[in-house]
Length: 201
Image: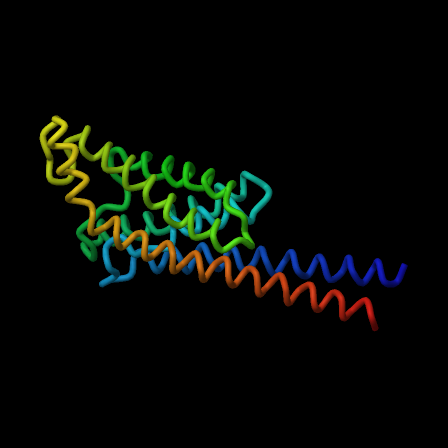
């Protein structure tokens, strides 16, 4: 009974630590996204969506992790825009598409195995590709961006326009996926070692 109580106590501590880590992750990712001088497309939100879909078993929290991070950074962008400190609004017409896309990327994360490097790498390529293809299709249909004509050639040119961002997005997702999945693996392994050590005392 004493061992069971100790395990339960350890488990509660682990859960609180992980929740705190996720909250901290949301805040850090949001602040990084609005950081001046950040390369266009080099942001952690796609990796966060993949990570959340893969690791967080409660689906509502899996969707919430990247979406909250996006929402916080969008609010910061908008405040900066309203105060004259930024040139881009945080909230704009058609923005809901971004949130839907990150929800879709979270679904991609459902199929990523959290301890399989090949699966993580594949997800890190699929996620940015899904975002690139769908987001730029909507840019083309709405005549946003460089307002390419609504023809096949215009669609292809719209995709060509976005290739630099796509390339950067892939590099960012690979990097941040390595950080997120790697940190989670080390955290959970350390927690298991501590629990095992506690049972042997």
